[in-house]
Length: 388
Image: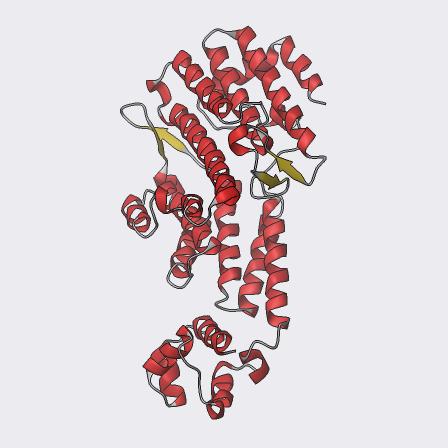
């Protein structure tokens, strides 16, 4: 009870935007006493409990955490907002209704960190689906963000303010990490590089990440499993950096160089998933093959471009085999202890047809030069038929 009471006092104080000193003055104690309660180093005298509850406008039962109705309602609202927001995947499906619901929740539960984070994420997404992300080329031919345009997005301005407010109080954990990731992207979109670098200094380096730290927290079979999990994430991250390198280098790489880099980004999985079972990563690999087809076409290797598209379909077929099970298990020697829930953290695209609809998945300038040509080739329609 002691720890829960201190946590509840801190939650209510932050909800109302009060300082420890303000609370202390109101109930006649020192700010050091309030600090001790919130840290779990003590608790208020029982005769002070009604005054504290009255100060925050809650019942004594709620102060002690006995009333779960508020928490349950917040859980339900956050789940609904997140589910609605997920439908706005690249297009505006219900973004206005989603924003309205999040704002209503903020009025009902002012200062609640989870609802505030949900509203910030909806606004983050709203900027993309309403206006889009724009790029320019600098004098050296490298892609840069059109920050002048992006700074005009009211949704992103408000989201940045919300994330910055949240990071003053959010404790370390998934919610804080999510806020940092999304805020970093908005800083990049709007050209706030100094603020981005300052934020970077507040987080651990690669070797202080959860995946690496887990290697030092276990031994035996659990250590081997943690090693496999970290290895798979590193492979995916390295491959993603290689794809990103192809994109950000723009015209400074030839189509042939981009082709080789993308092939290498795919092949890196072969060194770990040696039996060809890449689990939920098959969806990602399929996407890389679609981007590869674009640069093969630009390099004049049109037959190979359609061979790459066939490989993309093959990857999706392997992925679909995992969808019949609740858990995806890896079978290669270094990762055979690793399993993932099919509806877990990795977003899985179950529709093969989306390969054609979203081709080439990544937004690259060459798309406009190739799309009409490759789709006019009779083999495109033949390939689309295989996706059904």
